[in-house]
Image (cartoon, rainbow, N blue to C red; front, side):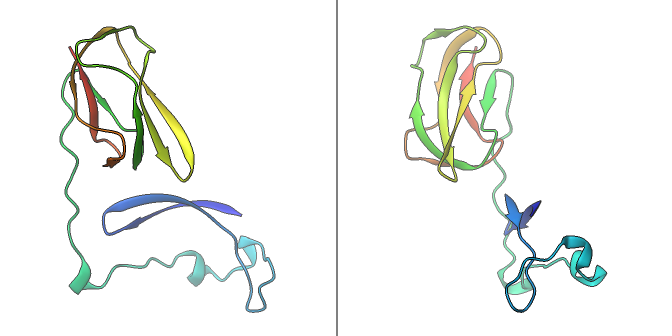
Length: 128
């Protein structure tokens, strides 16, 4: 098994890959040919679309650490929060990731709602 990061149409995915031979038996990655190990796959030119970049994060912006779906917004507009306070819960691949305040502040804006899809680096909450 080997962890790899792939990008498809501008979206990045972390995957675990298992090498198999033609009969479906596990093989070590060292047994693979160098051509297989170095293969890169580019999308066809006709379907290559630029993905919209997440909005640039400014001062006080709390961003998503990964692409996923918002499970819950655990803060309220105008709420004073301490560093380390849980602000948002993001679900990806059936696992919840908690997003915490990196500094003391007041919730100035909430940019997401439960159920929203988010990209890595997208602003979730802004603290002032």
